[in-house]
Image (cartoon, rainbow, N blue to C red; front, side, top):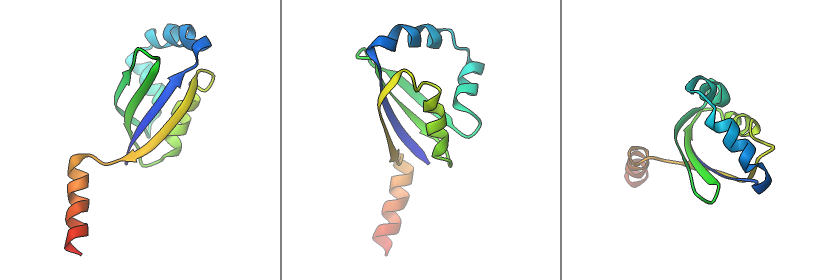
Length: 97
């Protein structure tokens, strides 16, 4: 399943997050997300809010990933999403029945 994950960074933690995140390697990123979560894409806004599209069959993997940053994140929102192909398939099934 795919999920849209949105978050903000606490104002007093921004420098620490920037220092940590900017030093991360691809291997660090993989370790951060774990074996059962795939980050399809991640974007950061100038407002220190971010969002990512992730994929996992284990929603607790999202919580585990976010807990790595629990001292800094705020206002987390996780929403299941479908891509175009998944929505088309669902639409065909619904309309056929």
